[in-house]
Length: 297
Ligand code: OGA
Ligand code: MN
Image 1 (cartoon, rainbow, N blue to C red):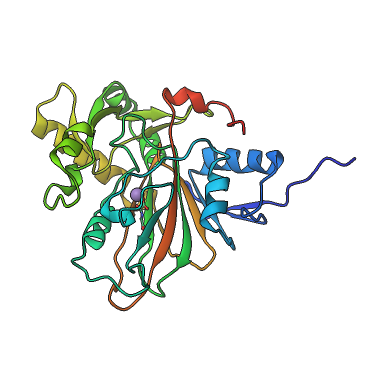
Image 2 (image 1 turned 30 degrees about the vertical axis):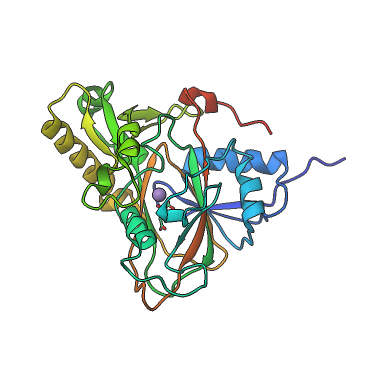
């Protein structure tokens, strides 16, 4: 019998990260050979843009499970208070009509327009997230990405050494301080966690800056100094050379590695164009080295 040959094709979309993946239908179970190709590409390229997909929530969840456990979102305004494995990024209500801009779900989702890494405010942050397009606006509403790995690799050796053992405090409500709709005092206290500023991918040993708007302070540094350093690092990671903006097309499903990239939503005419993307989030594991080998099903 012939060894199965994968028909998957992978093309880089940016000189430093982001690959387009075609030639595979992810709505049916993925063979171990194909998953190996996807797993290797994920670790190498950090962002995968799958084209021509036709996910239902069930098949999107099933594909995500190749990578491990999925996060379960608590009920909050961003998912219309529906707890579960799917978060819906949309400007539409359940009836399919536009939501008013001051609706709590809209206010909540606007916070995604700041650079962040998903679930960095959880004790074990997310491994990956996938957004699958259901309705895409004709203009605007891109998702922007930046590579904390490419940025880290360009730092001078002394700077890398100085950052090596720093730990940051991350907090869910930090980026939302101005309008903290949807969180009670308990939530705010519970979600202060720490993560290293430099994270290492155990598969290939590549290191990345792990920052973003949830990170607010550096352990052992005066608060203003820590905040200034974190803002500087986020600005460094998100400069044009480490930046990719994804214009959504019908059939796109984009998966990103939360360990080494930041992302943000961008605005669009939310009273004129419809946008609906469904997200699954793959839970991390502690320690990070647990992902040193391909996950088993
Ligand atoms: C997310 C997110 C960005 C977008 O779903 O985690 O940040 O473009 N979404 O909707
Ligand atoms: Mn996000």
